[in-house]
Image 1 (tube, rainbow over the protein chains, first blue to last red):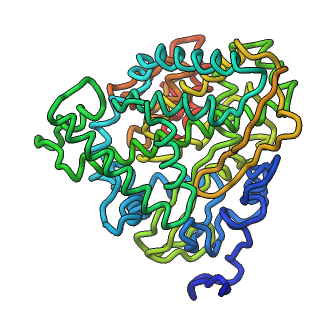
Image 2 (image 1 turned 90 degrees about the horizontal axis):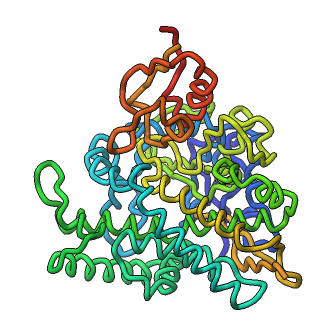
Length: 406
Length: 64
């Protein structure tokens, strides 16, 4: 029986909004949709409002729309905790994924251990592998014909094989892992629980293997790593491994897909990149701004006022990056996609201490993917008779993206 | 012209370094080094752009 969404007593009626990141019409799977434009419209309204049922578990949350207010939330780990058991709750346990679900100062010691592995300078060493993989995939699909489904034939295989190589996990089960990520991030509670067990069992066997037989990879780094002068516990190792495994499976592929979805429908913008390939890094930053995919969520640790709304301790506070990245106070003409945009301090990788650990690898991967694509594929469009499907929710994205360059 | 660095706010986006690697030095973790940066003559415009690129507002322009 459907029941009316409940609004907590402390939320005044004028603070309740109608928008919902899961259930609003534009957020549902939509052929040729633009969920980003729908979120951008929130900037016409209040900087903070209450949305009943706006998490994937159907909980209500305060949605923060402006860049300034999101910075206030995401930079302040003392007032807004990031501990939510996003993974462990799926298997009926209670532990944080590390470092994402730890708050400062506890967070810092693990983050310091991991930062050097994915620093801008270290990421440069991975570029030859990324390039070789991108070329192999593009040449492969070109040899098969003049059209391809981009997510399954290019974006996921590229992003996931790079990440698995970084972790030290063989990629012969790549599409199986992508399936697990899909079940974890986009499906209901039963699928999520089953997928969480599969991920954990797999990672635990990897960890045991690396303990017995060290290699030169991230998993081995973890089993040998020290924090505060002691080795990591088994629980810490699996909490870190889970986060990195999940974090790398979905978002980079999503970004590549969303960029090619935009470019396929805008031949003039393709031409702009063909005429001036040097602007690709700046174009990729702009598309990260225009089409970011994630929504950081925090829990208030105290009562406070935010944007004129009464937040109570324990309330969820949701910071969709696709809202703050379209904030006109931060970005002139926010809905214009300008490949030469200056001062592009977008929020695709979030703000504050939890800034995406993999951001430097992610942006290099996207740039390389698009550079190699443009170097090898002539002008392309959505294949006639097919319809890409966009969706909102936990991670925004696009599927069934069939491109045609015949 | 100098650039003031608020190291507490730096979250390692490295957008400053991407635009002006000769002005900004990163530590091994990817955070900007916590010290005032003296901008050489002629690089003021670049320094301004790199400062405005910081998502965290960790950088600001000051007078030396």
